[in-house]
Amino acid sequence: MINTAIYSVLSSAFPTTREKILGYAETASGVGLMLGPIIGGTLNTLLNYLSAYLIFTAMLTINGIITFIFMPNSLNESPEITEKEFDAIK
Image (cartoon, rainbow, N blue to C red; front, side, top):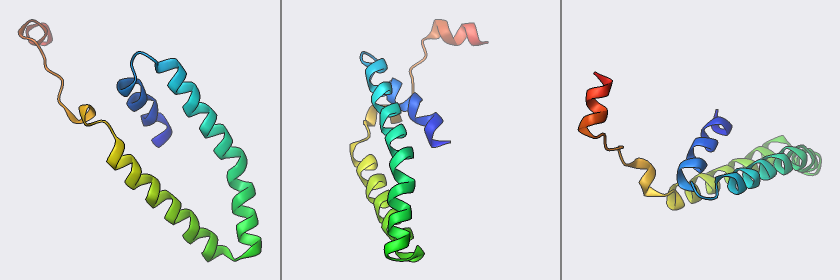
């Protein structure tokens, strides 16, 4: 679900460099899918399941806070519809 929504958010936030930013997002996703099991398995082996779970929970919480702080506020604005567009909808 998040992976689908991120394409829309990135396309809206970076309309002029959309392809480059989406490429960065795909790269980050691929690297995360490759390294996540390795890091998670290592943490699970060295510590235990609960410790690995808490570490990744902390990482996701920090990521959520950073995203909330740096998300462009323009994404929260309602689009303005002109009278001509409104009449076309009717």
